[in-house]
Image (cartoon, rainbow, N blue to C red):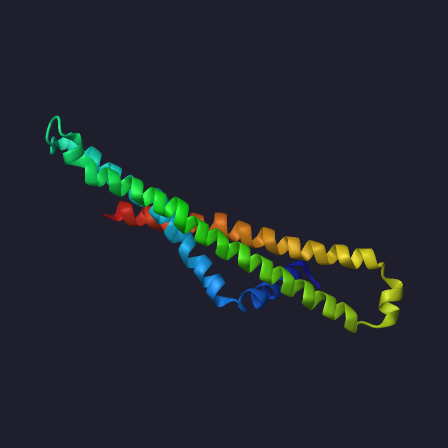
Length: 167
């Protein structure tokens, strides 16, 4: 089997087990970029609005709280809401999905091994089979974490940045 076919088969195996839990999968895929938007982009926009008002002189001198209080509370509230609540929900979805998929992968692999003939097990070292199983479940965790927290976040940041610069 070529390397491309092996990679494709591995990704299909991961996908087949991940899609059994659509609530956790799509919840993680939706809330993570939204958490990044609320945590990193929206508070910065509010701060930019405050700086713009300062530059234009659109405030009451000596009354900083009256001029900028609601915007400051909004920026802090968005940071806290996104940083505390939304990211915790995203991490919970990811953690729960990884645990369930790892369990399913282990069951699938061990069921497959149980169906193999006695001659296969006689010519194979049992520890190597367990090691290969641990490697595939570890590969799933690394794949999902890298995809979720680096690749998807990169594309979401590019999308949000492009939308901000478009205006």
